[in-house]
Each structure stands twice: as C-alpha cells, then as structure tokens.
Length: 299
Length: 229
Image 1: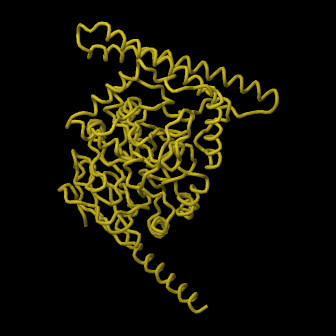
Image 2 (image 1 turned 60 degrees about the vertical axis):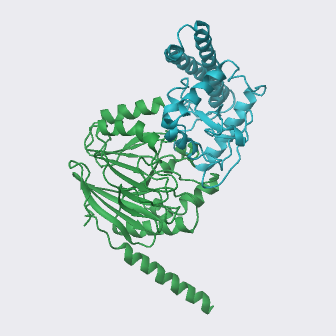
Image 3 (image 1 turned 90 degrees about the vertical axis):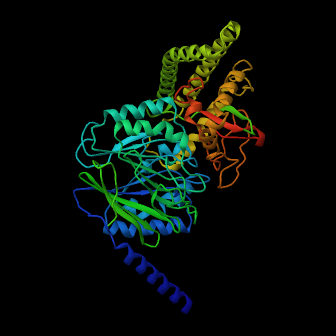
C-alpha cells in the first residue's frame, strides 16, 4: 500500500515535471497563424512512444496545434486492428479526442492500406495534398499554406508527374512537402537518400518549395538550408537511435539523446519551430523567413 | 553488386472501383454485375491508354539496342508488348475481384481495412487458382527486364540506387529480418518492411497500370518485397 502510494506520488511528480517543461513554448502562439506538429517513426506502441505522446498532449494544452503531420513508419510490424489501437489511437487518444487531425505519409514499414484509415486523412491516396491554413473551401490556387504528402517508397512517373503538376498549379505562399526518406540527413544508420534527392530536389527548387519534413533516421536534425529549402528530420517520435548523428557539416542543430517531436507555427512569411523532447526540453527552436531563402535564426 | 535482384509481381493494391454500396438479394446481384461491367470497361480504357505509352517505351528501348541487330530489336519490342497485354489481363481480373467487394473510400476503420485486404486476396486467388510461375513474367520478357535493372544498378554511379534498395529491404532492415516467401498468390507478410524501388530503376522499366507496382527482391536470401494488399 505504502509502495503504491509512493509510486503514485512519484508519477505525479514526474508528470508535473514534464508539464512544467512543456510550458516553455517559444513560438508566438497566435490564433490567426497556422499551428501544427510534426512527428515521425512513431508506430511501436511502447513506452517511448506513449511518453512522447503524453508530452505532445502537454504541449498542446499550451500551444493548441490543429493538426499533426506524420512523416512515415506510422505502424511498425503487424497492422492488425489491435495494432492501430496500440500504436496510434492509444498514444494520441487525448489529441484525437480534442479534434486534432493527423495527416500521414507512408514509410517503408507501412502497409499502403493505411491510406484508407480515416484517422490518417489520406482519403485512399498514396500521395495527396491538403491546405494547412484556414479559410473556407480549400482551393489549390489560394494563398496560405499547402502541404504535399509524398510516397518516397515508390517515386514512379505517375507520382512525379502529379507532384510537378500540383506544385506548379499551387498558388500557396508556403509549399511544404513531407515524406519518409530524408534528402539530407546526418544519421549514421541511413543518411541522405541521394537517389531520392536527385529526383525530388529539382522539382522542389523549380516549384518554390520552402520546407521539407522527413524521418527515417531516428533522430532530430535541422539541416542548414539547401538550395533555399529548409529541411527537418523528425524521426524520433517513437523510435530512437542514441548517438546516431555523425559530423557531416550540414547540421544546423541535431539531437539524438531522446525521443522528439516538433511544433511549428506559420505566421505570414515566417515559420517558427520548436523541437521538444519526451521530457519536455526544448532541443531546438528558431524562426526563418520564406522570402529570405530559409535561413533560420535561433533565439 | 553481390546479390541478384529479381522483379516480382506484387499482389495489387485494392482500388476504389465503385462508389456504390452493396445491396441485398437480386438488387445486390445486379449491383455486383454492374460494378463488374464497369470495372471491365475501366480496365479496357486503361489498357488502351497504356498501349500508347508501352509502344513509346518499347521504341525507346529498341533504339538503345545496337544497330544491325534487327532481330533482337524486334524480339524485345514484341516481348514488352506481350508482357503489357498480360498485365492488362491481370488488371482486369483484379478490378473484377475488387468490384465484387464493397469499395474503400479512405474513411474506414482498421477492422474494415483488414477484412477488405483478406477478402480481396481471396477473390484474386479464386480467379487465378491455376496461375503458374511465368504466366506474366515469361521467358521472353525476363531477360529484358533483368538487363534493364542490372544496367541501372551497376557501377559506382549507381551506388545511391543500390543503397536505396537496401532501405527497408527485409534482409537489410535494421529493425530485423522478416522472411518473405516468394510464392504465387502468397500474402506479403504484414510484419515485413517494403523495399524502396529507386526512381531511376522505375523509369527504365515497362510502364505499369496504376494498381500494380514493381518490387525488388533479394533472390539470394529467398525473400522478396512487394506492395501488400
């Protein structure tokens, strides 16, 4: 009985500690801006993912992001109905209950049938686009923020044609692409997907993509802007490889000591970002201007 | 490259072939028949559209083959066209199998998705119970495809492409090895990751219909990757 009470007290202290850290939000947190979170390589259903999910909830209480971008490996191993509960619905139960929407991209560990899962908002498509900013019916040619989900496992001609066409037709101020394999990464395990970069980067540069979000390497890394594009590797939402970042010269900020996710806010021409660890520590934060070629500054 | 990569035909992914919901009794049968007819029409339309693309691809490939080897050029063109026809037949079968089931819209719960996957696999198996190795990848087209893949994956400049293939391949995945048995009409194991297919390789392979995808398999370890249903 005494030990149970002690455990409960410890748990309460731990939760308080986490919540206290989570209260440090460095973003402007304006109601009028586009507020979202990014997470990757999440789907394990283990303690690391659960604790990171709880920290996302704590952050959401202070910074009410409206949607979460998932950069793939949403479901490791089997994906039976029970796995969907254990590896997704349970860890993000309270966020789902609060109406936060999740938009998923497929990773190499994902069954493509995930695209039919209503909580992933893929509408049955391997690759798709959605409008991140508020404002009536989402028309492709409106300004604001538009996201493009890409299936980097299978970049065939039809997908590449679709991507080039959609990006060209988009009149959005911010074009943000997200997919699993990072074009730039200092991860020892995988590193930069050079083949994928050779195919996608010219399209991104030509069509004015500002931000690229990816995962695959189980680390957090902000890459120094490449050809005017800001790249983030956010692959430690439920998987972690401690010490996996190697020196490459392209890291603006890296963190490989704990699970992480990122929150972001787009306010006009500025995007503010903050990477948060499972324990609520801010491991990176800053802001960059879309028009200034994505050169980020940390406060 | 030490290991040999084979191309396998993966079970196709389910497609939303119809907007209609299933009914009951005679109405349901009529609906199913309508859906099957619609699926057949769609498959025929797609086949027609793709024929032109295939023709173009076959011509491009033939141009790459040395001048003077007229017979080899013709054989290659014929092999690709025949292969494309067999794919069209498979696609028709797939669409009909999908049309016999309630369609998925992207708003499903996990139990419905899982049940659909099992039902579609069963429907496809029922329609191609007599399938044998070589029915689609016959002896004429295999050397062409293997040569194309090999050419794209050889040499130091192909190192990034070779690296991509290992990404997520069940044999090399850091998450652990999950064997993938290569059998006709087999399920792709749910626990196995999917090998990434380099875009450079996809661009030199014969064009596939939307519902089918190429996959690369490591033959030396008797495992394959494919796009699961």
